[in-house]
Length: 103
Image 1 (tube, rainbow, N blue to C red):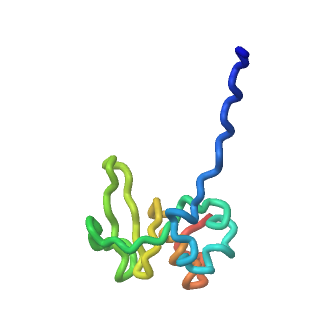
Image 2 (tube, one colour):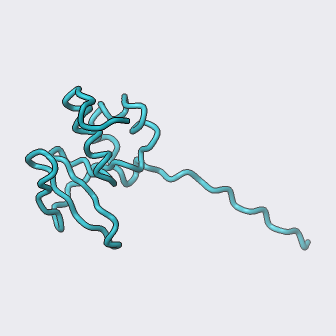
């Protein structure tokens, strides 16, 4: 039997496994952007490497990733965002305002 093996199907990543989705703020699930871009936010409890982020409200921190261009923004309630834009979007969702960021 010299059959060519079928290529494996790409499986979707299990975001719940490493994003701790059960801890995410329910407001994220209701937002059209975050509900379809789940990899943009995760729940983290680590604090190592985070520094105060002066451009965001009190309690927000930022850390640089492995690549110097990667920056991760962490909210006071332990939600980590992959961009400043997404961090600002979350702040707006919590405040109910859309003035900080034009989408």
